[in-house]
Image (cartoon, rainbow, N blue to C red; front, side):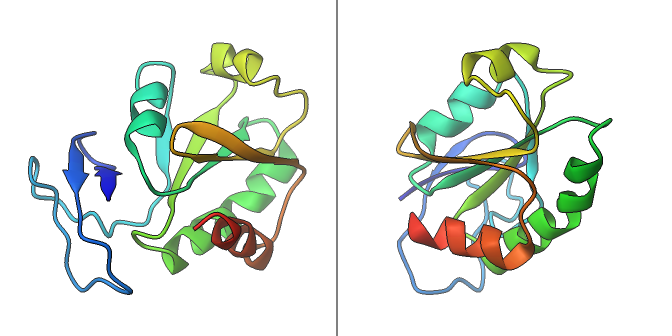
Length: 140
């Protein structure tokens, strides 16, 4: 499966397994098991979404949004549970207003799920960790 490195953006081919003990980027050598959500903007969003065969869970948020800040730890904790099963990314709609407009984001937080470059699901409002994990698992 194709996986975009969260560190350098290189596209890696990774064998499909039930679980992984080690998986490093062929380009930068950093771990592909890094589960911290990746911050994306207009420059790297399309590359990341189009080249990942994993479901990409996108949190559209803004720094002034209270529910967004409250959901952030749950989003990070959900990412930890699914290394190389889903990729978690965040888009700051204040900095990437064009992405918010492009996807019709009217309220935040909004979570969108992309699979093979296409939007497959969208939900608005803060979710807890279990809800985020269950949402990701629906598309794995």
